[in-house]
Image (cartoon, helix red, strand yellow):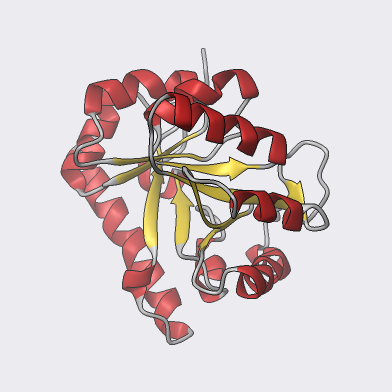
Length: 232
């Protein structure tokens, strides 16, 4: 796969930011409150380097193993790395070493393990978001709304894990408006438990709706990098 030219990525980034600004202003929000996460899964390091030169500063990766070489090559000095895919327990130690934020914390058991590893690795702070499953989809991870209070209660006792907010991967609908109720409910939950917390919601096809409903983190892949190439 050839690296995308910088002007292609720069134009796409600018277009996404314009759309974020438009959606934010529509509901009287400050666009600067919204962080753009470039979802870089499946894209090789050379494309990520081009994206950095084009202005991307936060990347979202789905798999720890795939992200490791990219993070080691590009570094963490000027780029922020978020894990936005399901974290398997056996990859927890590596994730603690690599990522600035884990957005997909979905159980007390995983939180206990991450806290213990942070202590063992002498990592004083690790930002985490609780991934909430509001649709009860069997194919997706996430803590249920019913069990969320138990996870939050544990996180409040942690020394190393810093609970920053909530994340959702809602069902996919061609009509982005159908996703709005999920974003609205996540915001309501956030407002109840952590009024100034982060809300990670919205992807390429629905991020404008997410911004209108209060997203502070949007995870954009296709609209920046284009359609992923099929595996041969």
